[in-house]
Picture 1: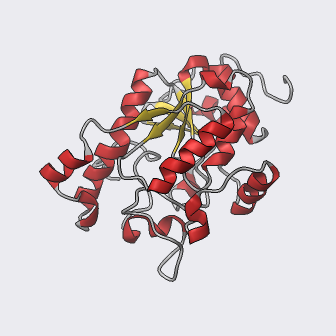
Picture 2: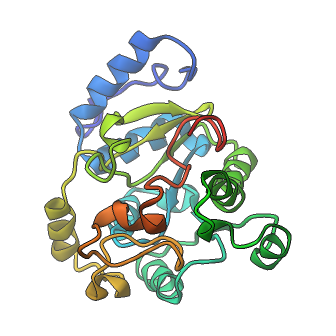
Picture 3: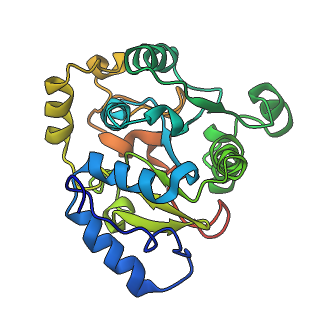
Length: 257
């Protein structure tokens, strides 16, 4: 134990996502005893340049980004932001506010197919009501850009701010899961909305502008909505058609997701 952080060098460094389930179970048990910031430090120590973080600059993104900014040499950890080209103007402004505040320089990644080209060739895939069209949209705009960035950066483990209470799929997650050939770390997995609120308050973190308009989650402008009688949280995404964007699910879109 070093400053409360478990020493597992070798245990994770040599972990194969398709390897020993017992080894992965032991790592999960050890990580459960750590605070979220310690989990980030553990991953940074274990994977070095092979560790990265993803962010959406959404409603609750400031918490994990703030924790990262408190780590020594945090600038060496890539922060990957998938810009779909359809984010609300408020999100772009909020991202600049947070980056200026925390000293972050995100690695902004986008699809190789521009929004205009996609719409010309395939139409507005998000609004047809077809699951296959929505799969194609999410694959083009979110999953493929992220996977390309993870490949380019040789990432073996990446952290995100997903939480177990957000969707039924996320309720089945553990703090460390294999996903598409890499490990996914969820430092905030068991945090509640109350935990998020008080952390932001205690550290005087700025709130996303759309929060005051009733949004508890924000993605693309066309598929996000404020909480209301028809739903709240991620049940408002894509008109209720889909809660997950594909980034946090195994496999690729179209493989039974």
